[in-house]
Image (cartoon, rainbow, N blue to C red):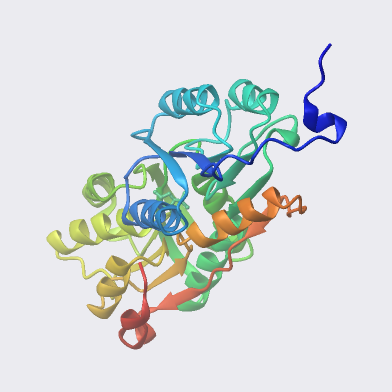
Length: 308
Ligand code: GYE
């Protein structure tokens, strides 16, 4: 059979114009300020680096994420970036990506799979650690005695599962810290207000502290507490996670007591990681973002430097 001349030491075909790196990004949705900050960071960085980014917003539905990944595979993208809305149900589509030799980079939320070769790396915070930080802060703030009302994130999502787990571990050693009621408010401000209104209706005089898995739900809860004349940030201690701008504004106003940062500005790290993989370098299976807790006492000095 006739071999290509290049294979016999002839002149290799002239290299075509450098093909643009193509990346398919399947995003959860636009449920919170944190989420839109993450989207902005990844899309902005792709723009800056001249990457052909195909973006798909799944409106919070896993079926739409799976559809997007199937389409990225058909388009033969070079890499897939996935922020998985829930932990389970990814085996089939990730196996298809693996068979198509398309590396998958998870951002922001982890997954449960039987074979972890189905994704290359996870770039995220440690949500269990965030839950523990929130619990330890609340224990100090309340001298280890509080009736806590918990607003959980989206059912089945890694941050909701792990922030609950870490918080429960953190309060275990304090017998007088109790989670009296706990319900999902799906990471949104509107649902956070709704669920808090229900808690107030049934348990008004018992509520001493609110633990929200993200700032958007905390801000909704604060609105409900305000409308019920319950002094959030003073009579009721409120702590949440994300550290978005709205949380700093609420802390400056004295209505939110503390928030644990979960950094969404992953754009540069995502594309640096892709470049390492393209250069054949090994990357860690879990690339962890560092988090820290902010309190209302320092919010006024810090708010000006916040990027999201
Ligand atoms: O805390 C919340 C968003 O997955 C870490 O999802 C993310 C969470 C974040 O809706 O605001």
